[in-house]
Amino acid sequence: MDQSPFAEQVTDGVFGYVQPDGSWWINNCGFVAAGDHTVVIDTCSTERRTRALLAAAESAAGAPVTTVVNTHHHGDHTNGNYLATGATIVGHRKTREVMVATGINTYENSFTGNDWGHLELRPPEVLFDDRLTVHAGDVRLELIHPGHAAHTTNDVLVWLPERRVLFVGDLIFNGGSPFALMGSPAGWRRALDLVRELEPETIVPGHGPMCGPEAIDVVDGYLGFVQKLASYGKAAGLTPLQAAREADLGPYEALSEQERLPANLHRAYAELDGLEWGGAIDLGAALADMVTFNGAPIRCFS
Image (cartoon, rainbow, N blue to C red; front, side, top):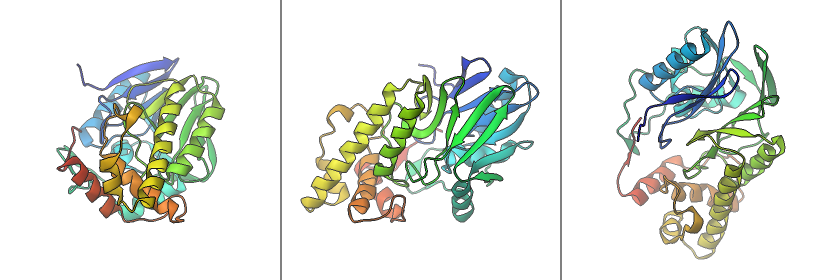
């Protein structure tokens, strides 16, 4: 199967940029042609992938990239920001705060195989807290923060109401296991209610093939499964890693990146202990359990 990224026109002037196979560090992006300029939604994890994205956007749209919108702070969506040299970077206030505080994270003890190239930190320069409207020619982009932690503390939906197209960031992993370590399973499920209320016809997920609203219930169901497993595991005196190893994934057996389960359970356990949605936990311990569950550092292909 061809694993090359491709730009697919969703509606007039609106493109999803899909990067197979959507696994670790291989995200989806998008762009909107605005006549004399182009608005890009997210960059990529590596120099090479971001250069390919920007070239594809300018070629398909026929105009330079002047605006980049980040859907959250994770490096697979922001590492390439610096390469959009003529563009303004737009994002949530917490996206900038986290990026400035932590810098570029490659988590070398947990992942292997990434071809990062040269990376420079460039957080968003135009910030918002709740909602912001961006106009790309005659296309209106509504940037929406759900108001609480979900996949992260700073997720942004990019909603094109007149086109019924939603760039949902990592609130949807289509075919992959959701990853709630830096957010909240409970908050994520509430954010999915917001996604449903928008009634999108086409969803560009953060990872995996473009889809429709049917993908919402799969993610919601998986997160509910994580919450139930956490309740069982804590009551049984199991660690998150032990609970993950004993788990019957049932309908979620076919999802890729199953090693995310113990990390998700670290977050779900913390919430059962009363931690606020998105509150600080020991990320290192959760990532170490993920690597142990996997049996080795996780192989990446970015």
